[in-house]
Length: 293
Ligand code: ATR
View 1 (tube, rainbow, N blue to C red):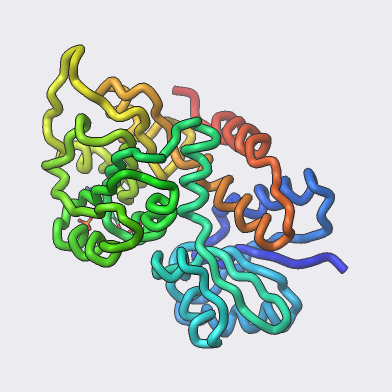
View 2 (cartoon, protein in one colour; view 1 turned 30 degrees about the horizontal axis):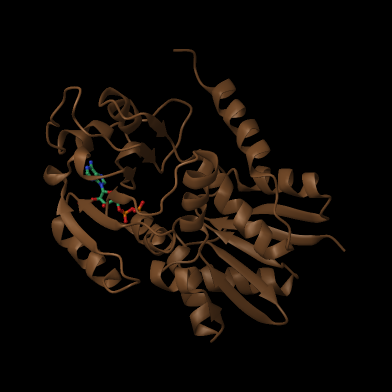
């Protein structure tokens, strides 16, 4: 019998997960289907109960249900991974032997994309993350586990960054500190990650305007990588800015999307898909769909 999976969200029609998982399944000869499930707000648990009754084996969970997904596993007294617990959110559920398993593969997806595809080691790196929302919370523990030297969380609302930094204080031996956006200096970090939602709207420039003027010149130190967690057909405002600042490697979050899916697929199916091939196809699709500039 074909094993059934889906992504649950609201809205969900735009999700690329069905395409990605269908490609993984084709590659590896796995007999599975992967669909789109739009749940009503406030109805996540009932919706998931229904899918489990239909025999679904696992789900990806996207906006706005990642908190509901962890609550779903918690209320049933089932298994929640440490990274999902620290993220306060789950993006992947697995149903096995009548039990629910919750995980969060976003952070490990980011780490895999940076270290494998971009070829940038995170070990002993000073990392600065812009933003202190759910996207940041989801990646802090995997970054710490990747061996970073320090983590700075910089946010428009400083108190939010402070609260988040405190909740990770004492995790490993890695210092996690908070900072205002006006105190983000490129010379102070090796890897700069944009986890704000500002790149999603036309006001990406608003985030950049909050950063200070950086010292320039041939001796000015720069991060080795600037990573935007959002992606699109065109480079984001953050990416264009980072290039303008002379940062050598700059990329968007398309690879993170593929890698978090690959982690979920491996967890469900016990097989590692070829994420690079799927990444290349997806990038080509995005570019083909882009309006000529
Ligand atoms: P997500 O789950 O995507 O992280 P979120 O929890 O709403 O979404 O968090 C959005 C993040 O983007 C926050 O850190 C937010 O800053 P504030 O905490 O100050 O609101 C940040 N953000 C959104 N728009 C921004 C902008 N124009 N400039 C700077 N930061 C912005």
